[in-house]
Length: 145
Image 1 (cartoon, rainbow, N blue to C red):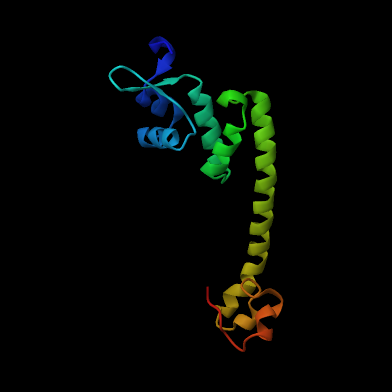
Image 2 (image 1 turned 90 degrees about the vertical axis):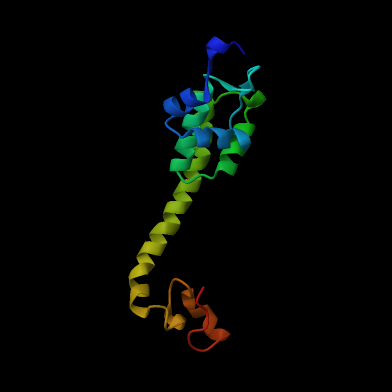
């Protein structure tokens, strides 16, 4: 890796819009890679900026860093994601995001009924006890988790 074709940790942080601690963390969990100079300083290929962009976009969608690492690890030879790679990854993540949106919409739709009960009458709570499932096991409020 030629030094002129590389970025310092500060340059990656500035250009990637993240803290230097995030750069170190991403490297420690295998999301990005660097090489060390003879003075033990990190040097990153410029292509790491695209990886950082993918990581930030995935995090904005609520995708965990473990899932991002798995996705990036699926790329041949750990290469930087191409446009086609991004389309494939984002399609998969979009399905997860749609599922999450559906769960949040269901939660929102049940929230109004929950406000009135205050979870004091758990037998009627449509959030914590949908369909009064706990009534067959307990009487009254018995589960507040």
